[in-house]
Image 1: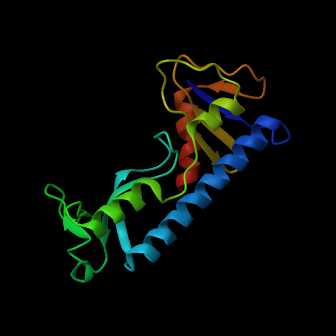
Image 2 (image 1 turned 90 degrees about the horizontal axis):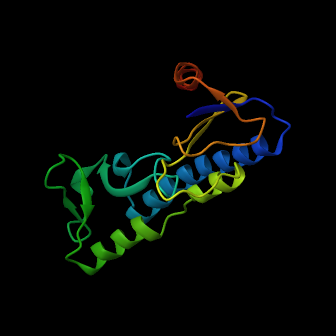
Length: 170
């Protein structure tokens, strides 16, 4: 189900807006932390991108470095299936440390926070919530089982959701 929030003065808008801004800052901080830890710049990553996971920020399992010739083979090995992607070399202590850093050393958010802000019932089976700030509107995608009760969370069509979201891309 698709929703939007336009009332910038309501608590649900303020809380979701703050959450999403913090998550975007976490994304930037994590990229800086990876560059500092690896000593290398990367142009792409391998893993779960964006907010469609339990941590609501990109989860890294491999990187595409801008200067692959500088990659330390004790720490990284080439991915067997994906050209240009390096993953931590788990056969070495420093590789396992890098793997642990990528898995546990980066900042994260939590999908539960969206559930709490929207005051949704916990479901056994659900779709991970998607929240995006587009200009002055917040758009939300939730699984069919979740129905926000807050009057400021307005159900919209998929087409309207996508039209609003396209504004973000330009």
